[in-house]
Length: 168
Image 1: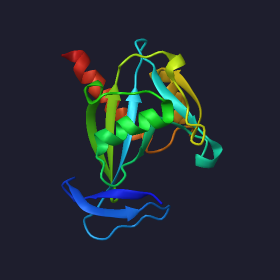
Image 2: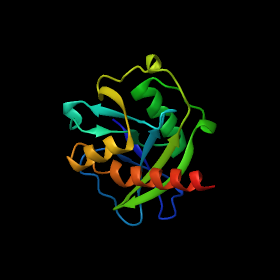
Image 3: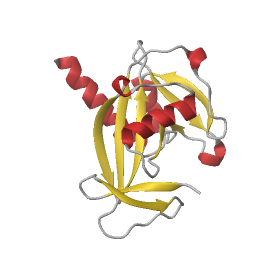
């Protein structure tokens, strides 16, 4: 049984948890959290994964729910290791922003730490395959409803971030 960490309306961790299930509802000003990690290579391509059919078979970036006792950064490192077999350190990751959905915080992280494709070890229960995509290719996948909906606003936030740092 998996328990999710709960947060208040200011994104502070509460000493409370809730069992993870598909019909998650929370009372009051309580939120659970999901993280997404966008990994970019030195060619400007982003690593996306095709999820297994049991998970919906859509294209998505690395991500997951924040479990009890963890925060967004710790979960980002944990999910990258679980889903891809890649180890990141906190200093490898850049926090981009938080998108708020109904009773859910979505923390967005970005990295351009380079690694070899041979280093990738897929979590077969969740990830069918991975591939590197250009921004144009990702936008086409979005147009054809191939990308998980929650990834779309997060990807736009990453592109906004990259646009800002490019102008500096």
